Length: 157
Image (cartoon, rainbow, N blue to C red; front, side, top):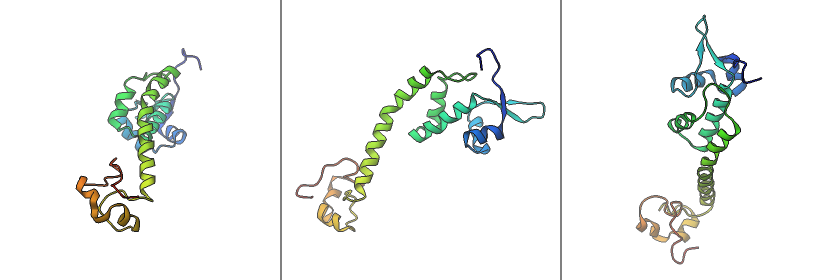
């Protein structure tokens, strides 16, 4: 399709089918200003094909951990009337790399916590009795101290 041709309009059902997103979610995204539609003579929503890219962007951004407000702020930097360029995507996605890396580190710590004492003070696991004797981690503050980044207790592990 050349850039001089108008973006074909698709029904909400077709957008839902192509994107894998429920029509109710599409209406919600529209109510939040994340996507736009036009109304036909019958009053039914019609979406430009480029909305598929915006929906894919929204889904991916949410998986990265962005809130809908953050997604809206990012989408404000993208064209509404045509498919974003590779340069547009590269600029936005490069900003997410640190966020993804931080999430990976957090998940790795959670994974470690499945087998190790996380310093929560529960003392219910045999390992906790060795790693957090008498809830020494609790002296450092509330919550799962090891998971929050505290080093192991002296003599533990």
